[in-house]
Each structure stands twice: as C-alpha cells, then as structure tokens.
Length: 243
Image 1 (cartoon, rainbow, N blue to C red):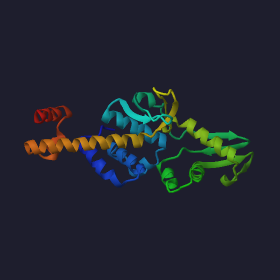
Image 2 (tube, rainbow, N blue to C red):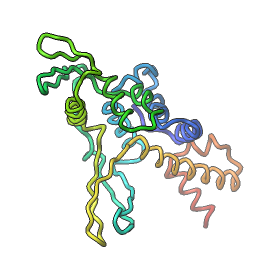
Image 3 (cartoon, one colour):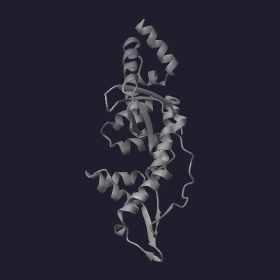
C-alpha cells in the first residue's frame, strides 16, 4: 500500500463523481493495491476493507481525523479530532471459524463483504435489507442433527446473529460518543470511514485544482509538473504568488 499522490487524488475524485459509495471505497483500494484484482477486493469483508481504508487515509492525510457533527438536541456544532490508531482493531485471521449457538440452533456464518452490501443497496425497507444481508452470510444452520432452512429461523436467532457479527468485526462499526458543550446531551455517531475519506478527498482535490490554477496562471506551468511537486515546494510558490 502507498499513500495517494496528488495526481491519484484528482483521478479518483473525478472518477468517483457518479459512482456509488461502495465503488468509491473499492476504487481507493484498487489504486493503493495495484497488484490486487477487483475480485479480491470485493470479497474482503467490510471490516478488512475498512481497516485498509483507514490505513490508506492515515498514509495520505495523516494520523488524525477531524470532523464535526451537530447536537441533535440543541443544534450546537461540535468539532472533534481523533487519532486513527484509536480506531484500529486487532487483525483477525482470515478464514477463522465463525459459529453461533443460540436457542439450540448452530449457525455457521461469514462476515458481509461489498458484494453483499451491493445486493441490499436497492432495498427501500431497512428491515428487509437487514434480513437479506444476514441470509446471504449464513452458510449452514443445524438444530441437533438436522439441517434447518435459513427462512425457518426465528427472529430471535437473526437478532443474535446480527449482534454476534457486530461483535466479531468491530472495525466495520466505528462509533463515536459525543457530548454537547452547551446542553451536555450525549449521542453516538457511526463513523463510516469510506464516506468520511471520500469527503476529505473531495476537499483536497478542489484545493489541488485551485493550486494548479493559481500556479499555471502565474508561471505557465503544466498541471502534471505542478502536481509532481512536493506539498512544501508547491506551498512556497503559492506564498510568492499571493505575496
């Protein structure tokens, strides 16, 4: 894996304009892992995918995440800055057995991947989407010595499986606890690293384009030459232009 270069940032930003968020996330990894096939990337479970995205984000933009949210109670804007390392979960061995025993049922399952999320993205009913996602990830169900059809499972087993999946793959469920400085209300925010990173890349891409515009207008340099400069050198030239 390598940090995204300024040129790669612009190419990804341009390519991702009309893409689904799932494609954008995989697009980031396709650039960062040029030797990996698209097939390999789509079959990473979401925790594995997000762990790689988190590392790529750290390499490209640094070790701290900065963002904001609004208090759901009073509307106060709250800014936060967090270390990437605080969100990195221990790596799990790929292919380790995943099994749940509940109410006499033995459920063998895998964790969801990008293909699974793409399958349920078209569902308007969240409950139906959630049920289909679990159904896709169940490999086998047994009750004693007998095999059981997935559609025959009680809802309590579905609920237990959803909880177990979240417990097993915490990297895909990053939650922030925020406290309002005005009304002291406490709430939780789910940090979707793929969407968060895309937002940051969009801001960076527009800043790079402004830099290219200003330096090309001042010196007549080509875009490729400007982007090939280090951030320090590019910034110095911009200070000269502005001064």
